[in-house]
Length: 156
Image (cartoon, rainbow, N blue to C red; front, top):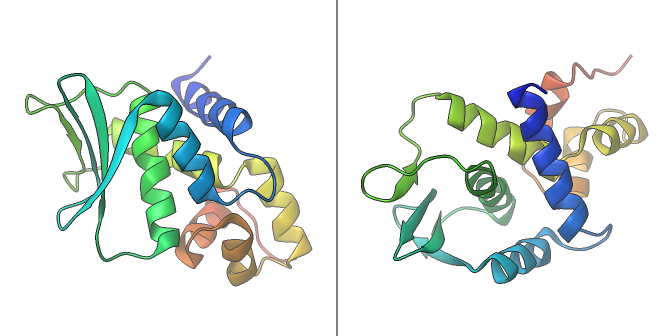
């Protein structure tokens, strides 16, 4: 199995275990964090996962939208469930560099939030309208557009 397939399978498994149709993503994230003992906090310098004394913490930025936070949260969960290594300070932090771990976490987030089969079906249903897709999957319009591009979806 390729590492990319492992990323996709891990995202699907986590979603299938914790998310149910019609359930807000916020509730899904709360269930995952509660069961896996992951703390969620907000700070000026958000968007990272850290570990101190064995306790994992996901930090989100203070001034971003809920849909942006959904992608960030799924991305950080990707780092955790894909077991990406922490740096010497006990942090997984976006450095702005597109490392293999960052690409994997983005792929994980996309599959977790917008599962391929469901997304393709919804894209056809909504005539490839990114606004309707973003509402359906609780993600930003940008995330919907990137997912459509990655899946090579366009209106016919």
